[in-house]
Image (cartoon, rainbow, N blue to C red; front, side, top):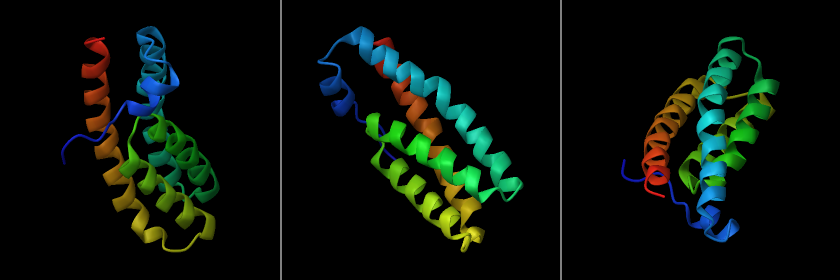
Length: 115
């Protein structure tokens, strides 16, 4: 899959302040796994409204971490949940998102350990 993160934005946003970079990356590292668990539960319960909200929330965080492909998947999930149609595509989209988050977490942990 290659690299899924790019901290260019967050480095610019923080003015290259390593403590701030670590803070924002740390927030993502704490939030992302919980969001994936929430989305799995929402999918199992066919709770499209909540899943749309969770997807929207993590989409913003992914953009900050330079995870453009992940943000695009989140947008697809949001669109499907908003329409409540095409929901049969959600398990595959969520699986792809979880894989991307897993890879992203590994990359981000390595990145901040070197700061």
